[in-house]
Length: 266
Image (cartoon, rainbow, N blue to C red):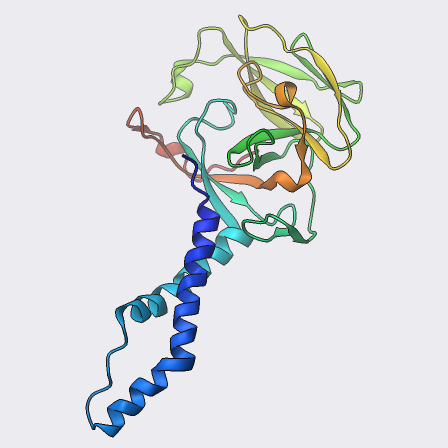
């Protein structure tokens, strides 16, 4: 079950804020007056008010930080290997592509747009309750061609150079397939690594990116559920740009790699 943490956070912040506000406006002064009249110590505020007063500022700060600045995400699959690994916990810049209202995801301040090569977190178009992370390959108006495992953008070949096999020594918590080969790919101004599998067939096709949409692909090119299969990502589905790794730990395998902590994402 996918829990909308943003919605839960908004509801809790609103509830604690309302309880604290109502008590401050209607009941707090009456409690203090009764204490003065009876010459006794101040009447202790109700537990729900006490907790609301303590929690509201904390929840509000978390909500604002998470909604408008940075948000943590966990990488659940290997579709972005070798850039991101299963078990990576990443930080996403939420204001890279504009300030949006939490839950509604409606843009209220326009700041920037995805650039080719950005690693982007977005709501999966097929099921918006699920968050995906891929690399932005095609911008609005682009023609994307993928043929025989070679990427073309607007007819221009994106050059790639093989750097050898993806060996088990390269990663601590995942066992690479024996047919996995690393490539350095130049994607516009971005130079990054991709992974291909010799035994997988190429997902050939050509796509023209419509206005207000983006074409996304995983760096694990042969084993990624991406725009080649389900189409384009609407601009309103964008959540932010992945900027760094703050932890790596695979809960299922009980394995982590501290050397990845602090790495930037390119």
